[in-house]
Length: 193
Image (cartoon, helix red, strand yellow):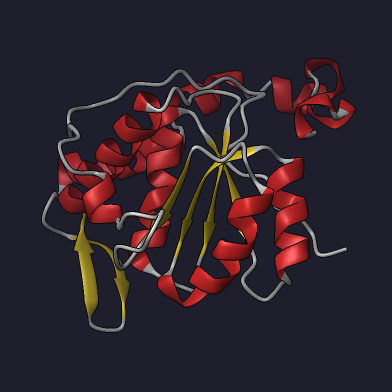
């Protein structure tokens, strides 16, 4: 498993990275989003073609995702994945992962189910969020990944995978603080070989 990899141990982090503690503590990934939401809450934060998400909406949705992850017992040291093509909601999930201190492991939809299974299993992903176009692949993965606590479909309710909207019902959009340390990872980018 990834946790046991010597590359992720504190002693293996180069001193140059350890020296960035002040920078990473001051401006973590989600603090950039929060800064924009404070300054210009109604400004465009994310846009893809005609779809637009405002800073306030991205911030609130990311807090809800963070709270849901925490309700599953996830936090620093845990991993979650998104299996999707370019999608604004998928990217907001990345902010939500960071809110809970969870590391994002992107799943490349161009890979085979076997390759994605290997990566999600190796990195011990506990949540997998996906687009409905990948539901057949997720059905194959589900049986092979008993450690996954939740499979969530971005765009519709499916058997065994609520929509993101339904999964987040009743969750708070109140701020959720997480301490960021220099060795904490925002993302682990698996390679295809």
